[in-house]
Length: 123
Image (tube, rainbow, N blue to C red; front, side, top):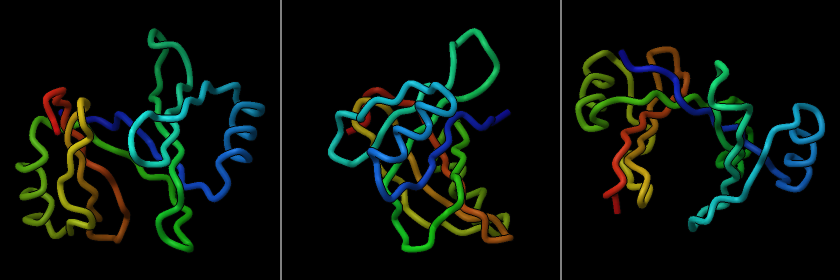
């Protein structure tokens, strides 16, 4: 059964956001080495319930919602399921080199969510 495995929090000021989440929640936050401005967030140890996520630069001027990503066995298959179920593809499948594949969709109520497929050979 696909589960939520990652969250993304939109931010305007990385230094301010990192300082806030580090100070308030003691989260570990590290700049991702990829081409995008993206900060990986570790919210706690792996042996405790919960998920990790990221801070990312706000893509839309008023985007304020946290985006949850759901791990699926095949992004391609689930993009078809999303559209067949009445949802929309917001951002098509893209590679996260060495990590996997991702896409962003919206449900029938306009809520955005991500799909993620683990694949270390993604380029």
